[in-house]
Image 1 (cartoon, rainbow, N blue to C red):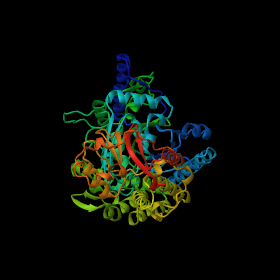
Image 2 (cartoon, one colour):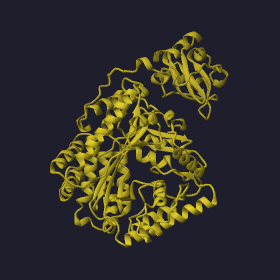
Image 3 (cartoon, rainbow, N blue to C red):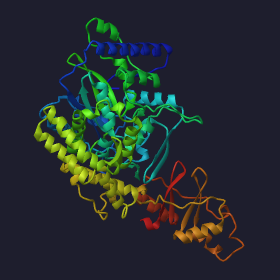
Image 4 (cartoon, rainbow, N blue to C red):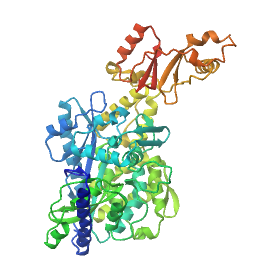
Length: 616
């Protein structure tokens, strides 16, 4: 939505006025293209860097507005979560050392943010999804206090009229009902822009779609969400579901999500994609519009097409077409939205150069790709890459090929040719594309995170492992070496958070629980099989209703007459409980005071964990 002051569409007059300007913008864009006004050259590149703010415990820190004010630089802007910020880099003409210039500016601006953050007890981290995030960080209390975010949230919630049902299945599985769009704020990306001329724009856009799968497979960096190991690039699944305005129903839902890869090739005029979006997705935001864009064109003025830009900003294809005006000349660009932030700025600029190189180095054999390939194969490649990263088998040019072989044997040579063709510095090309080559031969960000997280779980509880992992990502980033060179974190690594530990650090979340109607015999056997001394009793909504200890039931072992009794008659219902953020020392003191050896951990009366004396 940029810097527009937006309001929710409430009245018929608001809606009619907005739609009038939106449709006028489409007419104006058709005229701009028809008159050959779109700038053909120079080609330009630009990028947006999203990043996370954490505290000394490497947990999300809600200081974005405070840090933004202190930075006082127009390159920085807000994100929906109050622990994220964004940097908008200056556009560069695609030539010479444009990528190393962009890299230098990015490092300079990040250093500026780091200095300010440090003064406020915070740190900056680049990562697709912050490993130390919890569900608590994704509620509306963590939304940035800027009007456009609350307007967007209320508009989407009003449109949807039911909670967001998040379901992502990888090695682990996430099932979550959420009441706002704030889960979108878990995602941080490095969005890349490539300006292209209008002449071959449609064919170039289709090529951008075709290469999305293999490009993504080499750049994944977001395998964890809330401590669960999901997709290699979990952002793809999470963003799709977190701003989905479609409601669940018993009918087959044929509508397309606002976050989408698309459903077919672009074959008509490029304005067809905007017309399709307007046809599919109703507007729920508006702004102040004064000038008529068609009239402006007739008066030899170049319109900014603000209504179209506003609508385009609430539809999120992974490759998005954007219209802009630079120095009074209209231009078109493709915005690549599917690559994550991090792991380092070197990795990000390498990703950028790889994508641009493959875009510009397309061999003639791939012209009119829409006439040669089935779109569903390309779409399948994209989602497989998001799930499996570098282990993906891609369907490419009529046969299956590994991601590794495709990148090393075809796409990297293609990228070299494309970049050299447009006069990019050979020194930069060699430096940054070597980073991609080393990464596909060694490991990506998602592979490094996954291996180290599994390793840490050998000696750490989940929450602590999430923090230790995040701390080590920060350390590695600060050294500046690409992720392919990062070594393993040993599982015996001591925690730096002993003094700030809460119950969440030590509780067990893989708990065996029972129903009040279960028999004493079953509960006894479960306790003996699993060598456990405490079993919570829950109802169908996972609400805690009782607790069984070994001392409550061991006397029934030799009493066959009572083994068939329901556990309801034995369980304790007067239970001492804590929440997950209770300090460990406080929980321990509570157990000593009450003379108990276990503490159920609840959130809104739902059981989420259990602490016993052994956990201390």
